[in-house]
Image (tube, rainbow, N blue to C red; front, side, top):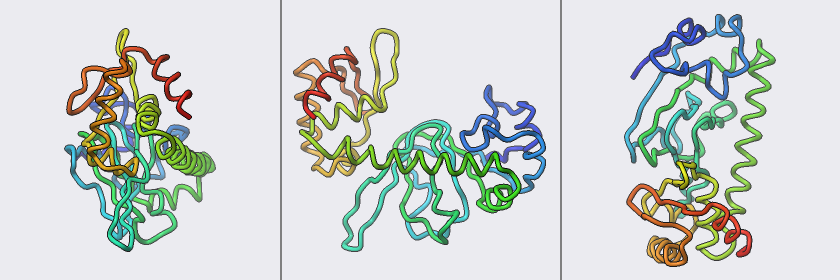
Length: 238
């Protein structure tokens, strides 16, 4: 664990090519005066895939900004069943219920190797009262998280499973040369996201490969030969 020095972060003198806090989605609009009011340490953390960040019901002492990788937010229902309710992507803020509740409403776990900033909620509470800029960012990021959660359910929980997968890949794909690459998580996790059995995910991936929509399926990723073709497929199957 590395503790981010506030002064170094503001001046851009950390060992990262892009400063840990200054580039954060939450702190992007703060000025030097705002940073001077931060007295608690902000932790710069890395976790390996499958590691737990926090557990549903844990005391909510921190908010988090994800810098690299992917995180799942998992909700355990009273009957013991579970569902992934949100995919956290780089730049996203999560654990925001810490600002209103004493305990986390979901569990957060790493789907891949991740790099994140852990921010004590005391910083947000005290600085939010003094800095209109931070207050605006909190409201903005909270709204984005709600919108993301709503679109998430709409996109990956309606239609044939191949169509849902297509929408998912379009959401997370990154263009690499002439191809696009999308991350692929454990089949069990993919099933929890889309409320289907993991065998269904495996069959759907094979079907999409046969149709030329995806290729080079590995344990961690798939390739998309033609993004426009995949987009048309996802829309036609709506």
